[in-house]
Image (cartoon, rainbow, N blue to C red; front, top):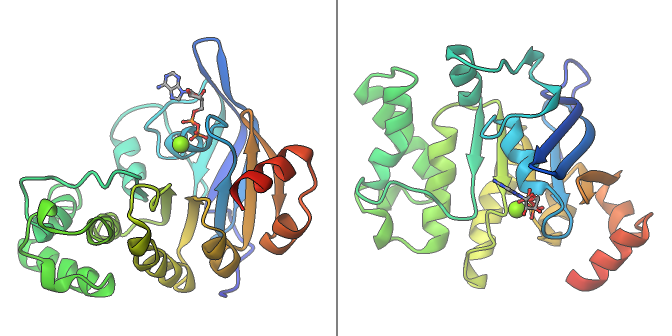
Length: 249
Ligand code: ADP
Ligand code: MG
C-alpha cells in the first residue's frame, strides 16, 4: 500500500450541510482526504453516500459549508467550476457510456471536447488506458456489445482520460453479475496502488480490506465512524455499524 502524504488535503469538506426540501441529507460534514488516500464509504441505503459523492463534484450544490479540491475552493458557478469538475472522475453504478459511440470514442470524447487534446494524442492515450483496464481489444465495439464488467472498465478508462486528481466511485460493482465484480475491483485496486486519491462507495469487504486506508461509515447523513478497515470490521464502535455489518456480512 502506498504512503499517504501530509500536505494540502486533496478533498476537504468543512461543515457541509445539504438538504432535499425538509430532508437533512448531509449533516455538518467535516472530512479531509489526503493525496493518495483510498477511502471506502459504507452505510445503509439512504444514509447520504451518493449525495456525498455528488456534492464533491458539484453535481449537487451544498446549502452551507465549503468544499475544496487540492486546496482550491469549489466556486458556485462558471467556467472555473467546469475546470474543477474535470479534476474529479466519477464512476456510477450504471455505467453511463454513450450507447451510440464506440468504446474508443467514449474515452476520447472528453479529452477532445473539454481538454482540447488533438485527436491522435487522445486516441493514443485512450488506447493506453483501455490497455490498462484490460479491454484494448474491445476499442471499436459499442457498449451494448460488451459485458457489464467490460463496460464498467470502459467507464473507468473514460474517467481517467480526463487525468483527474480524484476518482469517486458510487457502488461501481452493484449492477454487475457476481463473476464480473472482481475484474472491476482489480482495476480499482491497481489505481489505488498507483497512488490515486479515491472515494469508493462500496460494500465489497475484500476491496476495503485490500485497498482502503480508511473506512467511513455513514448513518443518517453523518459520518458515524471513521477508522482503519481492520478496526472497523473487527470492532465497530457504534451499534448502528454493528447492526449494519451483521446484515451484510
Ligand atoms: P445513499 O447513497 O446512502 O443510499 P443518497 O445520498 O442517495 O443515499 O440519499 C440520501 C437521502 O436523500 C435519501 O433519503 C434519498 O431518498 C434522498 N435523496 C437523494 N437524492 C434526492 C433528490 N434528488 N431529491 C430528493 N431527495 C433525494
Ligand atoms: Mg447511493
